Amino acid sequence: MRISEDGLLEGGCFIASPNSDARPGGVAVELIVVHNISLPPGDFGGPGIIDLFLNRLDPAAHGYYAGIAHLRVSAHFLIRRNGDLIQFVSCAQRAWHAGASQWRGRERCNDFSVGIELEGTDEIPFEDAQYGCLARLITALRDRYPIADVTGHSDIAPGRKTDPGAAFEWRRINNI
Image (cartoon, rainbow, N blue to C red):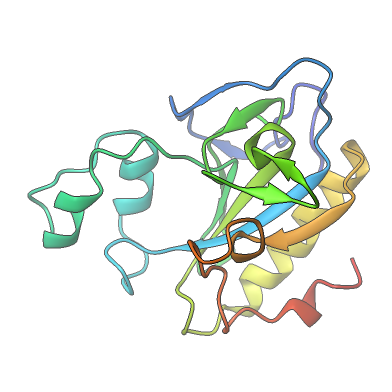
């Protein structure tokens, strides 16, 4: 796995999300933020996540969607339960994944981070294929960028976010 100079996963699946913009000039990618998502909550494998990131989530398709269809969010990457990897935003761009956030005294984590969504929930264990893909992706990102930390959404937005949750096994990626 390799990230090109333009921030794209070489040979990977890319579906461009409109929910991104330019990073501030001179700001390096130094942080990886791990998230989880499932749409509808607890359901896996459907089109909901992609539809959300592409602003085409139908609020009538599920009761939960009515409350989130208006959101304009994205992530750089999504790792499905089976380990399939989809990129939505070039790492050279800012994806809208972190929201109001702070890491080690720095505000606006979207400016200097890459967001990776794992298909899952806080409570359901993640799959071996997801950990394997995540490990390879972290290595590729570290090969391309001066990554200083890998953290969870809950760590950059405490009190507001809980993901990747108690089911995420940090020990499986701590030595990468």
